[in-house]
Image (tube, rainbow, N blue to C red; front, side, top):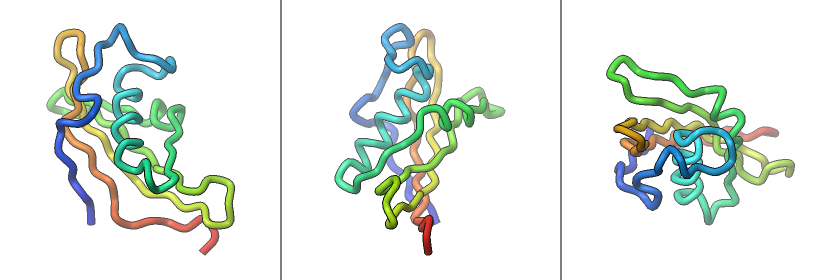
Length: 109
């Protein structure tokens, strides 16, 4: 089962020229939006993994699939899959959708 969140988020629109971190504007926008949604749950994401999992869909939108990592390095570490879908319009990237799976996978069950 998946949770679908609306497209208008804190970062809304990110200019291509102004992205930080060197992973591309799509990864930076997706990372920011996911972290906003899990901020109170000690979650983090791996931008390098996200950058490896960028694809272009048939309709031209951009999709990133990766994992949220909770309590990394601890005996309670767990992960949760997510997908960001974005559109590139002119020189900007716009978030269309974020899906976060409800299923949390424990590293050490």
